[in-house]
Image (cartoon, rainbow, N blue to C red):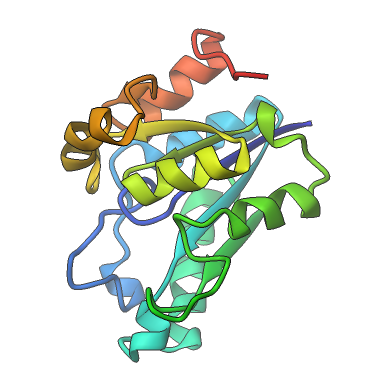
Length: 186
C-alpha cells in the first residue's frame, strides 16, 4: 500500500498566525490540489494529520472545521483528487494529549487505520512539530518551504533534522516522490 500523510495548514492551504477559522479563509497553496491529484493517480492513499487547537481555544467550532474540510474536498474533486481521511487534534498545547504534534499519536492512528508500515510512509509538513512527530513515529519527514517552512528550515540543524529533504512546496515534493528521487528509510 502506498500511503502519504500531509499536514494541512501551510502545506495544502495557506497558513495564518491568526488561525484558519472559516471556510472563506481556507485558500489552497498554489499547485497543492494538483499535487494531491497526482498522488491519487499514482495509487497513493492521501491522509491529513493536523493540529486544530482553534477548537479548544474557541476560535471556531466543529461545524466550521467540517465546512473547511468539505471545501477542501470539493476543490480537490474539481482537480480529480481526494483526501482519503483527515485526522485532527482538537486539543491545546497544555492539554497533555498524545495526538497533538509533535507527539506521534495522529500518525500512529493513521498507520493503524490503514495497517501501514510507517517506515514506508512520507509525512510532508512545514513545522518542527511535524518533523518531530514524523521522527517519533518512524515516518519519513519531508519539509516544504510554504507556510512556516522557511523559518523551520533554519531550525533543522539544531533539532538534528539536517537530513530532512526540503522542497519549495507540496508540488515539488510530490514530483520528487513520484519520480523515485526521494526514497523512504525502510
